[in-house]
Image 1 (tube, rainbow, N blue to C red):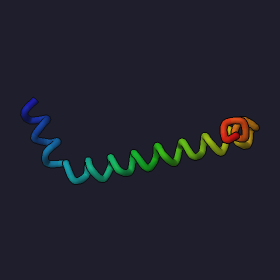
Image 2: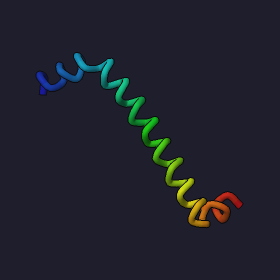
Image 3: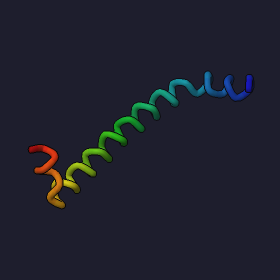
Image 4: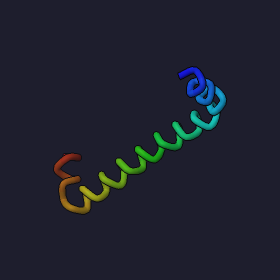
Length: 48
């Protein structure tokens, strides 16, 4: 556990970067899903 935690501490900057990148990827995926639903006709119902 200690060794693993030590590696996490060492990789903290990269982990933070990948966390932000992952969050952005989730938002982008949600946007793509929303556009797909809108194209399928479910978007206007949700927006209305």
